[in-house]
Length: 98
Image (cartoon, rainbow, N blue to C red; front, side, top):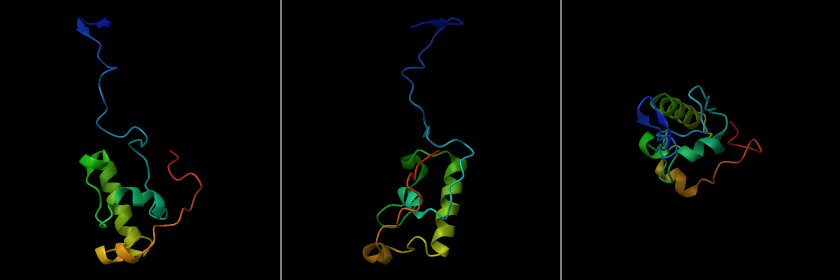
């Protein structure tokens, strides 16, 4: 390992705490339920930030987008709905493009 300023440089071995595919100013669109379904569990609950590896600001944006999509009936809103409702259709061909 190289030494910088008297310390070892261990950046190779350090894992990032957050997802790298989403920038800090990424806009989660409520009109794309297929990409939002990635952050909703099978029971219909929004996945917590410690599991989805999103920052606090990103988690707030995701939860606001999921709630708005539920109000517009783009995502099912209850546990019973997840038993009978089909998975959301893909709107864009590349849903996770950043």
